[in-house]
Length: 395
Ligand SMILES: *[C@@H]1O[C@H](CO)[C@@H](O)[C@H](O)[C@H]1NC(C)=O
Ligand SMILES: *[C@@H]1O[C@H](CO)[C@@H](O)[C@H](O)[C@H]1NC(C)=O
Ligand SMILES: *[C@@H]1O[C@H](CO)[C@@H](O)[C@H](O)[C@H]1NC(C)=O
Image (cartoon, rainbow, N blue to C red; front, side):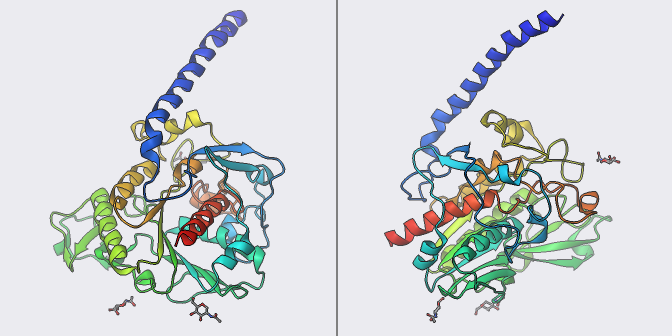
């Protein structure tokens, strides 16, 4: 028996390895050229590569950074493995990604401001950015103005970096039950989304910022907006007929917000759109005991199983929304920050059960969506700053 099963392993394993090898090779060859984002003129594609373990690599900041948000402060919250999580280095295929030099970067940004607009995954990104930049100016102060949810001012360089919370980007508000808007008895009320109006929090900020980074995606789900309290889409002050489902609503909001940005944000402002940050719920969704107690990044061969739409897994929405976003951004002046692929590997990088509050896991489940800080978004910062510097130098 034992001999037989060993034999099977010896025979079957190489076959699988071969299949994996070819399945990673084939699509790769056909997509390399089309994947290079045309509107990200950069010396090379920073978004394709692999994670390599570098034991000498250390995080740039620790749990004492004053800009931390408690539930992402994984060192303070005692997450296992934080040393290892921060020892992985992203190595692009055909070029080097240097770590940001905060002092040099802030010097090059003197008297300039950087704004993030979107959902909590952009807030996660911002916190990483603030903690990294603070290494060059520890007199950095909290900054909350002009509709900003959180941010910091760096007096040494006269630079402001802030986050404007606008989870759908478009304006939306709760409206108690209005019978004429819905025939359904079980509807308690609606969230009215004005597809043509940006949310107040970022409506008039574009003159202030020299660089803007947008995102939306994580709120577009029936867990946030179930059928008892659905999204109802309005255009020009009137409900859209026939009513749009969530996917079509997402498309229409994207088109409107992108065209609003193109029309109102000054030409000289550098505009980025951060593509989806993937989630890593294993064994169930966030409200079904899904977990992410991983010690290492996923293998490249595992990614499609987790994220490909055809496998219909619980984490598929990142790629699904990305298709629509990339389609909408084609031909615009907004550059994509395609952190999705690199982050798909990092099942090990989430706060999971280490949320800093005793009951949080029982109430909310594990957090396999946001990222531990220091952690994966620090690499997003390296990429963003490299692209900002490149594009500013180019003029
Ligand atoms: C700081 O930067 C702003 C632009 O963001 C500029 O208007 C202002 O004059 C600068 N202040 C100083 C002291 O240079
Ligand atoms: C933004 O500016 C426009 C034009 O000045 C104004 O009509 C609108 O009320 C402003 N919106 C917000 C949220 O401040
Ligand atoms: C999640 O786990 C708890 C405790 O083990 C169990 O009572 C509950 O039924 C599980 N929920 C789901 C959706 O599996």
